[in-house]
Amino acid sequence: MIAFDFEYYKPTTIQEAVTLFYDLQANGKIPHYYAGGTEFISRARMHEIQVDAVIDLKGIPDCNEFQFNGNQLVIGSAVTLTTIADSNLFPLLSDVSRAIAHRTARNKITIGGNISGHLCYREALLPFLLADSEVVIAEKKGIRTTSIHKIYQNGVQLNDGEFLIQIITDGQFSNYPYWSSKKTKHSNVNYPIVSLASMKVDGKIRVALSGVCDFPFRTEQLELVLNDTSYSEQTRIQQVLNHLPGATHNDMHGSREYREFVLAQELAKLLQRSKGVS
Amino acid sequence: MKAAQENLVTLNINGLQKNLYVRNAETLLYTLRDQLGLMGAKPGCENGDCGTCTILIDGTPINSCHILTVEAVNHQITTIEGLLDQTVQNDFIKNWAIQCGYCTPGYVLNSYALIENCPDPDDAVIDEWLESNICRCTGYQEIKEAVKSMLNVRKNKNGSYY
Image (cartoon, rainbow over the protein chains, first blue to last red):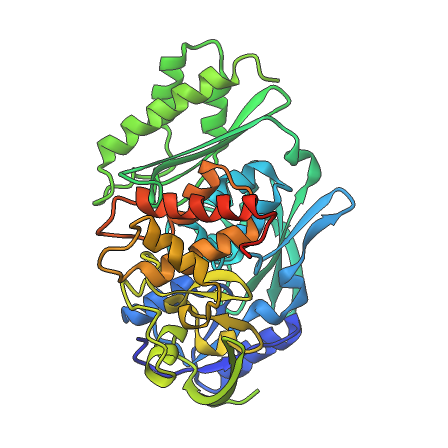
């Protein structure tokens, strides 16, 4: 049960949603954008969040778009993980999405919610980082399109009042060889110890990780190290561990040492699998 | 749009239209149980993890603890009380897929949605669907056998139980 009350709005246009947000704020209220709502309901129930108004984005057509426009795959922020997983339009994203939570939860969790949410894992972000996707963001002045790398630098960089409308990915990234793996403490349905997504683009390995640090990441330095064949695989893996972009995550699901051990195992598998794959 | 914290809504539940006042903050689980007396959806974790509160929205399994009642307006809600296809329950009974019964409504609805949506699933697909629900009595195998039994009945009768 959620102990506090809030107003509920379901706008049908981007402009209406943004205007609502700022109008509510101007009236001294705390508004909250809402799509799948699974994280919001859990956090509200546990008194971790309190808002005065919920703005449900599921009524906005742009947020529900999911199709190729020419060679661009457009995914609306309110599209569910199940829809994405079952579609296979972007196979790596489908595989990664299928490993998040469980199917009934994925019927409600949206891609926008997963990558903009409060939880630090945001696994669905990984394929977009690898594909250098672009994001369409609603803001006070209208709409802007920017690189996913700009708004996800060690966490979500969306400003107050902004929301994610769509993620746009070049269709070529649906065709590159890829590999993903997710290791959990126990059972399939759990937060990751290490969640790894990788692609081989023009002979080079791209890799993005979740569960290792307090944020999902893909770094140029890490990829340079991984692709430097002048070093042994073991040396490269050790170099990756030495060049993580933040402190290794350390919690009840997995200690720092264990996460690094699992990461080393997964990187070794990745290097083995990538041999002979162009 | 009303700037209210409670609204009069119309819900379509098990084929019936129900008009009721609900708090915007109320989850469907509590509307079903407390306002409509539909006790089949069970409160468990209330965190979307266990599946005891599973209902169908437009034929898709959803945790009723993880959906606001106001979100369910203009959708078809099916609870265990409204599932007319008794063969699903019968297969659970025949395969001993029930012990204490607390998780059963959620499992039955999820299994029904599976056979409706995936007429020929392999083991991996069945596992993917069934891992949405937790049972602390059976060893899960009986539940999987019940689902397979339902699927076989469907196949043998050209897609129909009847």
